[in-house]
Image: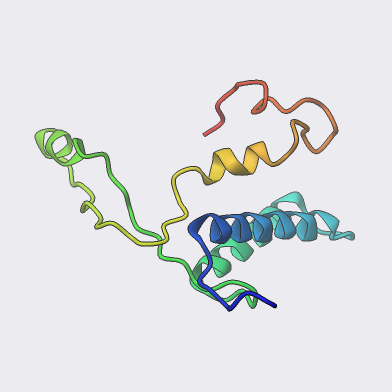
Length: 125
């Protein structure tokens, strides 16, 4: 007997999002012809932003909210600078480790087959 339908877990949604980003990278890398690297990068950025906005057929939209450090407001106002509003907790938040999970999903290899510098311990954020 099949299990009844259920809500996706946060981990499942996170993996679906990362898999969609991986698919977009493959798509934009595969485009041949007279298209510049910049045009491909802009296309990839547009695709990811469209996904966040809810325009991807395979995923819902996502809420993107600033998440300042708890000390930011006091520090920034002390410097005479504006600050970001602290966010309330969001159920199903997939953020926080996307870049780490994404870079770890590359199996230690860069696009050219060499060892990934990220995998070797360098931080590129």
